[in-house]
Image (cartoon, rainbow, N blue to C red; front, side, top):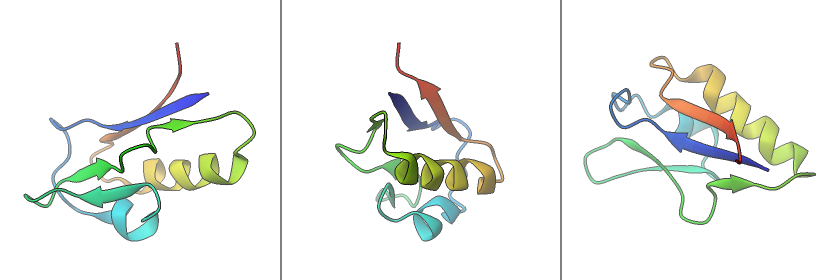
Length: 71
């Protein structure tokens, strides 16, 4: 399983993740990216979801989206 999160200290609100992958990301009231509730974990075998998460990671200009293995 992998976990996806947004580093709030790095995010500057470009909103590319929410535009590209709205099934995983949204914007908070201040315009910064957040992972949608319940979408923080990507189970093994959900390759399409993992690919979509990687698309967001690769397109974040601030590298604020982190995809990490679940410990």
